[in-house]
Image 1 (cartoon, helix red, strand yellow):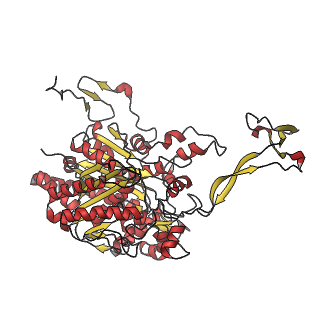
Image 2 (cartoon, rainbow, N blue to C red):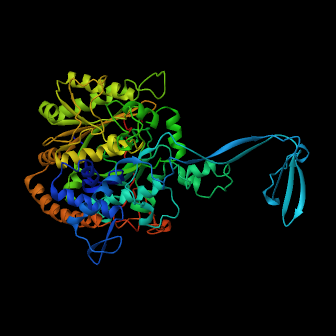
Length: 636
C-alpha cells in the first residue's frame, strides 16, 4: 500500500543568520564558499533586512538617501552586516548584559538616636500600602502627601543593575524589527516573528494561498506549531508574571498572548484563515520535529493535503537566560575565559558543538515549512525543495535526571537510518547522507550524541559520515532549533556546501568520531541525497527526521506518475518559478508583503449549509465531507 509523500515546497523564517527563504540565512553562514553572484545577493538582502539600505523609485539608497549600487554594498556595509548577524554580544534592544535590571531587597532597621528611633519618610497618600501595617504612624502633611514613621524593621525592593555572566546570544540581524512590518498591536516578539516567518514560507512557494484552497477541501489544511516557554516578553507571560511585583498592572492580553499555542493560533486567525487541522505539539528542544511528525502522519493518512509546520521562540530575556544559566546549561563569561585561557571572551565563538565547550548559547528564531502531498504538487506545479520520509519520536524510559540524555535517541536515529536505507539503498546512505546534529555545545552532549552517531555508523557500515551543527552559528533557539537545522539541510541540498563547525579549533578528545566527519571548515560536498535532522530535548524528547533532497524526491515522484503528467507538471512549474523569482527579488529589497488579515475574511456562520453528508461555506469553493462510513463495521 502506497501513501502520499510529504513534499516541502516552501520554507521561510528568520534567525541570527537572516531570512530563511531562498537560503539567505544558510548563505550568510557559508558566505566565504558561495559564488560571487550569490554573495552579492546575500549582502544586498541582509542590508535591506537590517535597514542599512532601501529601495526608492527602484533605486538602492543608503540611510542618508544617497544612491548606491548592489556591487558596492559589501564594500560599504559588509563588515557591519557580518558583525550584526549570527551569535554576538546581546544587544540593548533585548537588555543590557553589562547592567541587567533587577530588584534588590534592602532590610532597613531604625536607628535609635535619630527620629525617636523610627524610620521616617514622606510620600503621596495614594502610594500607601493597603491594608496599612499596624505599626506605621501616618501624618497628613497636606497636598495629598503624608509623612510616615515606622518603629520596626522594613524590607524594601529597589531598582538595581548587575553584571550578567551570560552576554552572548543568537539574535535576529541588527536593525530587523518584525513588528514594524505590519500592525502588530503590541504583540510579543515571538508572535511578530511568527507572522513574518509564515508569510515568508508561503510567499516562497510562488503559489497564492487562495489558489491552493481552490484545489482542496478547506478541512484538508493543517497548521502545526508551538513554542516552549511561551512568549516571555513584557507583552506576554513575562509581563503577566512580574507586572504586579514591579508595580505595574496586568493587561488584558498578556495571558492569552503568552500561551505556547499562540504561534499556531496566529497563523490560523491572521495568515491562512485555516478551518482544518490545528495542532500544537510541544517537545522541548525537539518541538519543530514533533509538529513536523504530526503533519507528516496526517498527510500520509490523507487527512491533510497542505500543512504549515514550524515553531517560533524569542527567549532572549533576563529571566529565561537566568533560568538556564542557573542550571549551568549556558556558556558564561567565566567558563569561556577558562577554556581559552584569556581575559577577553570572543562572543562570536560561545557555541562550540563537539569542541571544548562549557554550555549552549541561547537564540531566537521562527522557522516554518510548507508541506504538500505529491499529487497536489504535480497538479499545481509546485517547486520541490525536499521531502520528509518520516519523523521518529522516542522517549528515554526511566531517568535519574529529567534533563539528562538517555537511550531514546538511539531508537530515533536507528529507525531513520534504516528507513532511508530501505527507500534509497546503501549507496545513498553510505556515500550521500549527512547529519544535522542537535549539537547543543555542552560537555555532556558532545560525548553522548557523538557516541550514538558513531555506533549507528558502525552498524550500517558508514565511514566518514558528515556531521554539522546549526547551533554553532545561530545558537540554541529552543522550540525552532530543529527548524534551524532543516533550513541548513535545505541549504546543503541546494548549494552542495557542508558547513563546518568553525567556532571550534578542533574536536574535543572525548568525542566519538572514528566514523564521523566533523569538519572545522566549510567544504564542498557535492550532491547529497539524505539529511538526518536530530534533536535531543530536555525531559527525553528525542526526535529524528529523514529528509530527502529535491533531486531524489523528483526522481521518486517521476516513478509514480506518467510521462505526460510529468510533462504537464514541468509546464506549470515554469510559472511557479517565475512567481518565486518575483518574491525573491522583492524580499531582497525588504518588501515582504506581510500577510496579516486582522478582522478580514470572517466566515458567515449563518450562511453555513449543513446536510447529513457535508458542510458548505460560502467563502470556500469546496464543501467539507462528513464521515458517513462505519470504520468499525466488523465490530458492530
